[in-house]
Length: 114
Length: 115
Image (cartoon, rainbow over all chains, first blue to last red):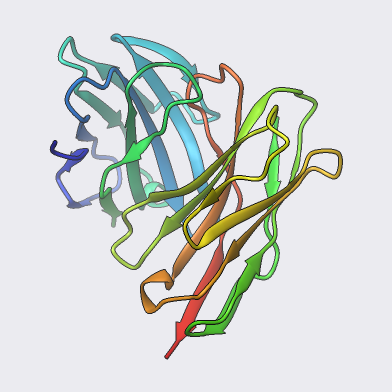
């Protein structure tokens, strides 16, 4: 089975622009979660989608949004980029929406905002 | 909100030796899950071991084992017979029962295995 894939792997954007990151979960997985990883703040939860519904949202401004499609693929969007948005963005998928199931992480998208 | 604390930001260990990473957490929940994730230089996050809070028995996975002390809210990871491939950042993480896959991570411990 193919693992979680994220595209693009690397991205350079300018302040004020917007960006869309994509995450394709493992086949059959219905839950997708997103995390932001920075040296200063560590790993922080952004949001989680299950069956196209956002069930949980972290403490991030409204510039961060996401969605999930019927095939479980998910996208996250960041509008009006700030320098502080530079980070590694990780997504994780799991089979069901229950906490006991293992989450599988993708390789991440490295976003640099200049 | 749950907080997860990891001290000892960087540790070195000789190959074949044992290293223990500590983790404490703060929660008012009774049912929850605890995890140790490994992030090697490739940045791929890999689950090392998982513990359900309602289970008293400590989880083990090959060379990895945990010491779960629920009352003390402590969850340490022991890596036995350390191998070069164990060099990575190790993150302790917490998830509420039925927490919709929301993980709260600690800041991480860098482990370097020296040949």
